Length: 254
Image (cartoon, rainbow, N blue to C red; front, side, top):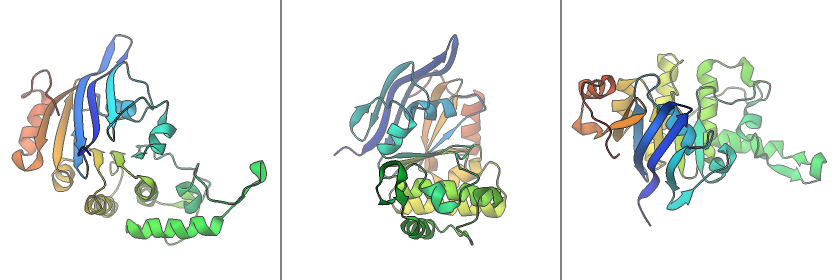
């Protein structure tokens, strides 16, 4: 079995005449944590949207777990083992924590078609187990999501991804709107995923966070990958030079 869990070859996305992503060659190995960095509009989120089929790519190939894939949409990507935490979190504000964790994959107690009965007890127990595994503390699981702090909401979204991701987790700026304590909690979850061998793609502007958490740093600039560097072989100044265009050519294989 190959040690590569995800690979893109020539991945390209154009919106009319705008080249948002151009010829992105990228590899992620099993258990590896990679940071994707770059300025606003560099192509980072566009890259993730092509992998997870939020959008359909213009050109290029995606290989996941040894197979060429062409997901029809995010649900198909999720069913294949890719869990994504987007900036908007995709949580249902009026539902409690177990209902959010199991949204779209509810545990059924009695299958009666449209009148099926959910096994709420089983979902609650499994939710608590998922929170314990990721060290997320939510005092009241029955509390609707809308009543929670930004940090708690973010941790619920990450715990959901961590609970169900069998092969890959992608996080898009998971701590951008969080305070110091909440950011530390999310970073501890990411360290726990590393210890469990779950591969991760982390989009982040926080270079301190990047150097603390990942194995490799991939830099996007103007829709292209311009660098792929081992964390221990680079530093913040080097990365900033690639982000700003002081270093880097037309792109390098990642």
